[in-house]
Image (cartoon, rainbow, N blue to C red; front, side, top):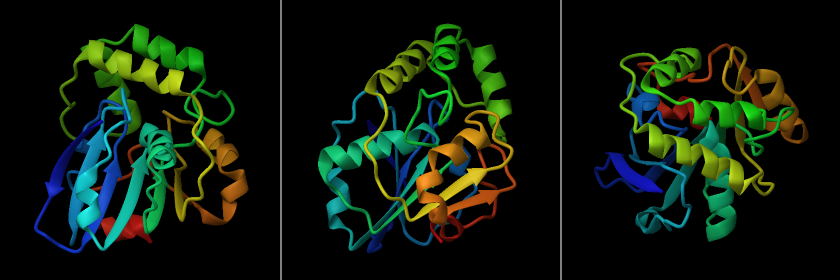
Length: 206
């Protein structure tokens, strides 16, 4: 995993973001924070212990898209327990036709990945602004790593946000995946990337 600070001013509270596949921090560019924000992505290997988080009194973890299953694997591996755990646009079942994305679709995305196909993916996801730069080979191998890692261990989320216009991980699949945590789930009228300029991170932690 790779990590980088989006905000680091020495507050006592941290927002830890597990981002989605290949989009980098672009989906979160317009969100305002009153605490430090550490962004994590690149799920080839989940061995990074993220030792910097130990200095904080409170850690809120927000996992987006394939960051949801990756965060759950990482939590099980490290034993870390965030103060609040949020899932957005993702499930614990990355390659599952009923509770995620069909495996053949993910493999087709990986095997046919080009800059043009990635730009199309970004539009389908609802990403505003420029298309992030991509290394097709690295992005392709990351998708294969996520598939090969398999379903994540069960973990209870404090809040689960399900976009109702998701064209990447179908909304119906997300609803099926979270049926057993229905009390924490909230539907929102948004695409796969539901974040918008001017929003606060507090709105997603609620």
